[in-house]
Length: 148
Image (cartoon, rainbow, N blue to C red):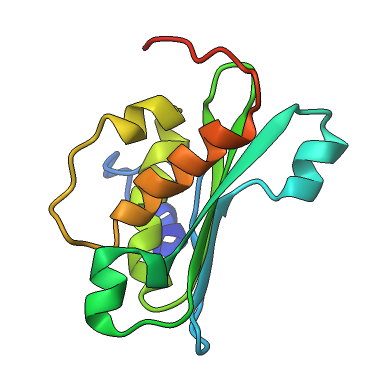
């Protein structure tokens, strides 16, 4: 749809949309849903990026327990150097809905520290982001966290 809108904007010179977004989320509507935005771990390795991963599980979140969820996972990939989020991968209920916040994080080069400092309604599945960031920081082992 967005590609068509860009084409029409160019054809009729409406100047309302110059190009398609560079960062696009992907969603697979299976059971469970799978969605992602950004790089894979393999791409990080190929590009020589020193990265770290944080994970959180749906069933461990208060909202997940309320919903009776027994499966689901978020994985956040971020640079060790500056903690910038490179990717978000989700599998589980509503993954294609939850990915849009992750898209904003990647697009705006937010850090895991900024996510941790964000206040979410409680209980919601968006807590997955915060707890995956906590997990990621714990996985750094000896890395000094920079203040934002």
